[in-house]
Image 1 (cartoon, rainbow, N blue to C red):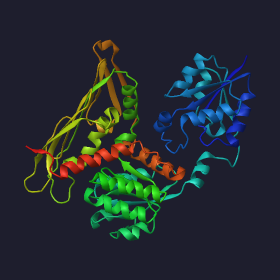
Image 2: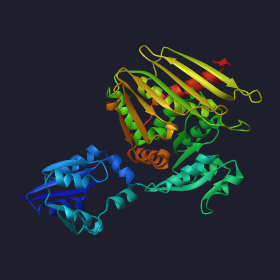
Image 3: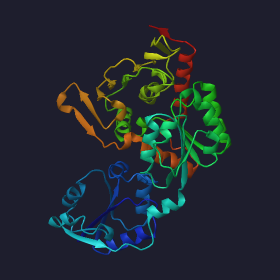
Image 4: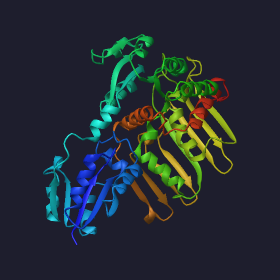
Length: 438
C-alpha cells in the first residue's frame, strides 16, 4: 500500500483545495491530510485565517478524499509524521517548489500544480476591506498602525490625535487630523486609545455614526455608560470590542485552558502584578486605568466576576487628584482569593501566579506579553515549560478578531462583556473614592 501525506490550512475551502486533494489521492492508496493548527499558522505569520481549526477539518473531511486527518502543530512535525505513519510520498502545491526537498531523505516528494485563479487570500481580500481610523495619543497608537500592516484586508485610513507632533510620525497620504468628526466620516471602524476620560463620548459618537469600535480598556469609567454603549452597538448592528492585547496571546490562552481543565487542580488564588515607572504628569493615564484592566483580566477569566468582596488600597500623587502611583486590590471569592498590584510610580516584579490544589502556573515578567510559562508541581520532575511565539504583543491577532467580527456581524472578542462591565465597575469605585488612601 502506498501512503501519501499532504498539509495545508484549507481556510475558506474552495475548488483549488478540492483539486489538489484529488491529485494527492491519485498518487497512492491511502491519503493522510495534515490541517495546520491556528497557533502554528500564527507562528508562521499567517494570521488572516478566518475559519477555526474544527471548521477547516470538517471541510477536508466533507470531501471524502482523506483516509485520515491529523493536526500540524509544530515546526519539524512533517519529518516526525513521515516516520510515524511510514509515508511513501509527501506532496504539496507547486508554489512550494524546492521548499520541502529536504524531505527526500525520508520519502518521495511531489509538487502538484495548483489550480490557477483560485486563492483563499484573494477570497479574503475581496470579502474583507475595512478602513480603520486610529484615535488618541501615545506609543500604542504607533504600535497599532505598524501591526495593522500585517492584517490582510485592513487599511488604516486616518489618524486623529490631539498631539500635532505625533501626527508627523505618519504618512502624508493618510487623513491626519485633530477633528474627530472628519475621521469618522472617512472610516468604517476606529481604534480608540485616547485618555480614558474620553472613551465613552468618543465610542458613543462613533457608534451613532455607524462606525465599529475597538477601544483600549476601560471602554468606560462607569458600568452604566459601558452597558449603554453595548446596547447602542447592538441597536445599530455594529461591533464594540474591549481592547486588552494580552487576551490574544497564544501562550496566555493556553495557560487559561490548562488551568480551567484542572491541570493544577482547583484554582485557589490568582496574583497579577503590572507596574511601570512614570511621573503621572499631564494627561497620562493613572495606574488603575493604565494597568488595572490587564491585571484584572486573569482574575475575572479564571475566577469569574461574582466575588464576595473587594478591598482597594491606593497611594495617590498629591499633585494630581485621583492619580494613583500604586494600587492594590484584593478579592474574596467563595472558594478562592485574588490580588492585583498596579503602579506607574512604584516598580515591582511583573509576574502572574495562579495557585491550585495540585500545582501552580508561573508566568515571569512581563507576564502581559506572555510567550512562556511554567506549570510547577511538588514533584519537580513533573514540571513543564510552554513556549509560544508572540508577534506584535498580540495586537495583530486582536485586529484579526476585530475584522472577522465585523465581517460575521458577531463579536469574536476574547473578552466577555461581563468582564468589561466588571472592569468599568472597578474603575467607577475608584473614581468614587471607594478606596483606602495609603
